[in-house]
Length: 429
Ligand code: UD1
Image 1 (tube, helix red, strand yellow):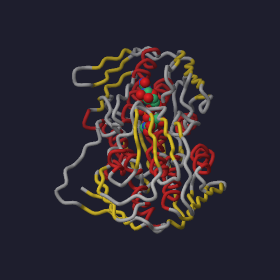
Image 2: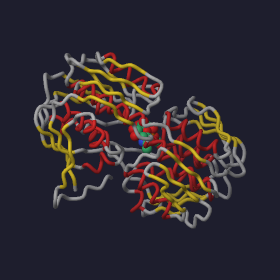
Image 3: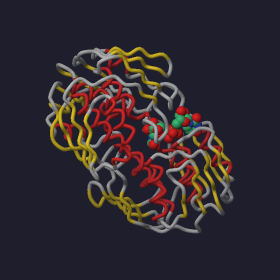
Image 4: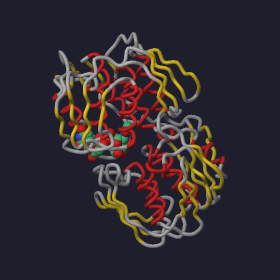
């Protein structure tokens, strides 16, 4: 196993290229099985969650061929199985997109319940199930925690989501794209990766309209064909590096981004006194003094993303004054505070609220990543802290950040990965 070791206090300077979006790739790759054809997908991030999703596709009989580090060809012509077992789903949440994709392809799916980041509360899938059932599928959860979904055929319908859910929106899109007639998803999620999935499906010949608004209309297609598609840049990876520069100080061009997708993050950083210039495909982040306090409420897109909340908590820990974070998406997402306390943050958590008293500086310490974004927050804390920070459970960080150590080192961070013999393997579920 490996640790990330950071000697903090170095200003960051230079350019970082952002990879393709994890959450878009994790929706699009299963989408490729909806055509009995070949899809070439470009700008795929080289991260472990994506590797697991590609492994699932190989496992059910798709031919997956790496063209280069960021391009794969998926030939779904001869898929032989509609079953995905627990050993393949236990590592990551988005494995549940195989239910929608297999239903869309075969009108049947047997997929083990997903693992994934544990934020400390429940992560229900009732809205996914509701959508599948409204489309005409019968759903059973067997004693081995396998979701068994089947239908004679799927028929378009109206689905009103009781809560705005990215996962349910994506899964219902995947299941309905070849259903008979029209499906309307109301109160749909509007995240950039939902729009990216719609664009991908339309490149395959689907008829998906309204993605990016809260009503998505899907007219079922008889068949889909292969396509070549390039995934959007990762909004959260970009935001993480923006906050890293803001916290550590310096001057970095974050490149290969869609600045519009970063609006809520940019707005909050500007409120904290960070200078940001937007260009066509990049943002320049400059940070020279102590950030100022600000309050944040996380919300579905276009609100401030919950997946940036732990990283912002680190920045606000260094701000002058008291800030409040209100977690508006997950019941509980402050488990990382306990680890950050070792580095000197002053954060009091009460349910969905965190009150953050800015401190003058953080100090390096040994910490453990509890989940993906918590791990990113610890990297940022380590970059800004005085002294050495050692982060365990790097596998969580590898799930969503391609070459994080190399990218940060290239802008002047003193950061490395070290192998720790004998450290136990931590499973991400
Ligand atoms: C996705 C992201 C995750 C991000 C989250 C919110 C992926 C692979 N993961 O997760 O990183 O934190 O969006 O932006 O894209 N809910 C229900 N019933 C359901 C589904 C969700 O009540 O059937 C609730 C959840 O408990 C949560 C809220 O809806 O409170 C949002 O969840 P959702 O958008 O579904 O998150 P994920 O798709 O799991």
